[in-house]
Length: 449
Ligand code: BES
Ligand code: MN
Image 1 (cartoon, protein in one colour):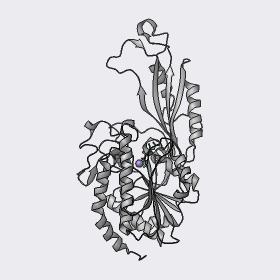
Image 2: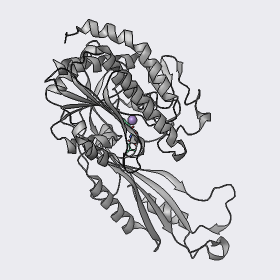
Image 3: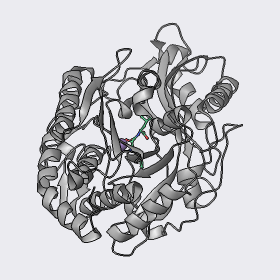
């Protein structure tokens, strides 16, 4: 294989970028919302589109795989030079629901460019991760510097439930020396990052019942507690007055040594004017390495049409982020113990686990990290990557590391502080995307030689 110079790589990125952009746009037009059973055929169509892209890159053994009724993932291989390391490139082709179309400034599944961003659901999270891999591969064409395995998951946004069995079934094909997970982001526009810790996730639905059936609120109010008020009191016990998670037994750890300026936190968080931060500790600890607990859904009668009855039962979804170093088994046990100990007035409490995904702490040292830092610094014209944590979760990482403890894991990605992943007007910063592609291409070159 002829070694490409850094200038050659830059020139080739320029050359392949328009085609990559086109392929990304075609992917985001597919409504691969994994949480929506009515769009399962779209998730399938998206897996087929992804598989086609790798077949067109002359990958062999391109397969769409699924297990236990899970969403389709794509596995593909392309061999590099004899003796070169194997690099597994991960991204996911499923997306979050687009929610209310009225909140979007352009149709969610119609890629639209405005002011240097490409807007659409999945334009960043995480179809741009697929596109970044594709771009880096196209830089080398038939002359890959390393052997490459692609793993493009189809159910990341719904908790990767069948991932463990997929990994088990295809363990032989997924073995790799280095894995690159393009599903996080960079520190700021113009400042790259490597993500070195992620929180885990435990989602639990709870139901509180106080009556066997609804009754007149005038006749029985004052004696019998209604389920909504009871649920509200229970939920209120989950934080202390400062806003720290009050569940006992959860782990918390120190965060990466990064200063997150207050003005950026204000601007990027979407916090409404006057909102106070909750919790204690440094802000990045609160975001990355302490547990967080949110209520993400409630089942209760609507205000419009609410009648004067005592509501017999009410439900809430609890979404708890676990700190790196904790396990979801421990966190779940602590949460359930807390709920059972605090449910007031003899109400009946039931719970169902929705999903769990383990947190990750990465040892960001060794040759793969040296190569990544050099590649990123070059791609960002001399600006070295920041080691950062993120508060979100990628269950794949812990699952993969359990199966392949010797592998080096690099968590990269296309997101920037204003990507709005999961929200309305999700958008990819196109100039940063080009750097992400360049960085990955340079990285593959360094890993190979
Ligand atoms: N890309 C995100 C993970 C992420 C979040 C990276 C924030 C960097 C910053 C990923 O697609 C995601 O949203 N994951 C889910 C996983 C869950 C369903 C287990 C999450 O974090 O909610
Ligand atoms: Mn993602």
